[in-house]
Image (cartoon, rainbow, N blue to C red; front, side):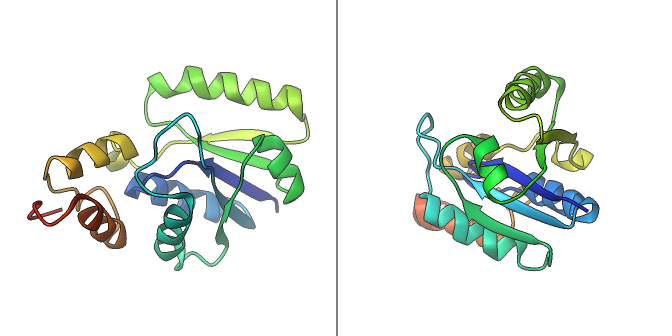
Length: 164
């Protein structure tokens, strides 16, 4: 069995992310949730905060662990002896970007394969950006994120939000 890496910004981790980690953990010996700093985005949570939240969320999945990385994903995958990159596809609109990334990664290192997993239908519309917008404007995001993430969002956005 192989080690898989599931990379992302995870700002914050959603129930959709959790679903994909659970699915990958059933397939692979180990799943490394690799949290990137992503300089092209302006994260709400620091990399350390995102890693801490993810560790709390994933503690019940015995063969999943959280790590941080920076640089090329295929180089990181090689360093941790991962032979598979797991990527999620929520909608057809995700496919083009993910397909291009998978082909680029294959050109950089043909020893690392990319597989695509689809989340549970209840999670297909969830994204970290949508969750942050809901939380920012006081909406209830408890159906979209684990409880610890909900509490962290409440803390980030202050007490003016009654239910998220």
